[in-house]
Length: 395
Image (cartoon, one colour):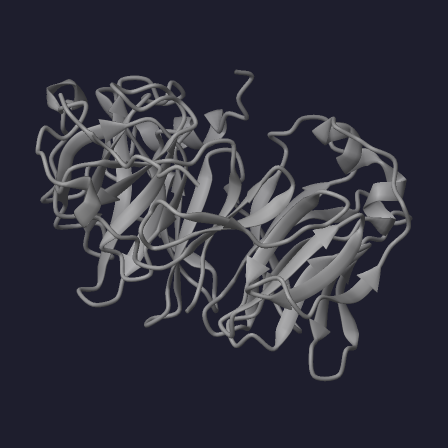
């Protein structure tokens, strides 16, 4: 098997839904028109060949490396350091207007895409270094004082972030509004771990939340918060949970790569948070797992990675890229190769996806990032390692 390597130039204990699974095993049926597939018949990698120099990224790529924001140009080769903070940057986001927001040293900051015009929007107290995830989620000082998880609104006019709760800052006024406060004095308080995404219309936020105190990392859930309204809790587990928005119909797709139940792929109406189960399901024979969906608006297809196993709590190691109609019918295999996936970043037009590999596969090592097109073009390995927080930029 052969893949392309884009060379740089010089310069368990699982949180198991046993109750849900038992409920559906006897009653659920496979979706008509979809057949089960035995994944061992699938190739490990594409065998096509092409010229690496002909490949270009759909937009500049930004990422964290060594505690700073870096840029990779569309040639998938040249990289440039953008920020030069004295303290490591924890996370960042890019607005539609081409501006960064990021956190460093418990400060909330913004700057231009070239690192200029840095502004401190909020300064929090110095916090002790904490490397254990559960410890930080239960630490009172972190819960009340840590500034983290900033995300731009779709229109680039507001920033959502967490500081003693969920806050939204209006960039025009500089004022912040507390949307959900961390009330530790209440019984079993609901706390926010991170902000996952704004909805396309800017009226909802998808968040990772938990009930304090938390005992296991798996005791975290994906929930949907309506701004100025209520929160729909635990619509999916954060463990293995990924999502995609349908901006045309105000829908949310939820996938799960860890549990092979009917809930492994759901289509939800945002306003009512009513969910339809659209995963392929063949009880007592094959269990299907879904990961990293993307809704492509030009043909109204849901693109998603899918794998199968004969055990509902024993996920497959590798996944195929497929497309579906939004109702789960009309499955079509986009590529016949399979990949071990850590994280992904879809191209804005859905014509390809960056995959961060969780395991070695042929020439590509664990931790590498590869480009997969949706038309079976050869795989391209990018010269990028030890990175996090991938984001597409704007020109």
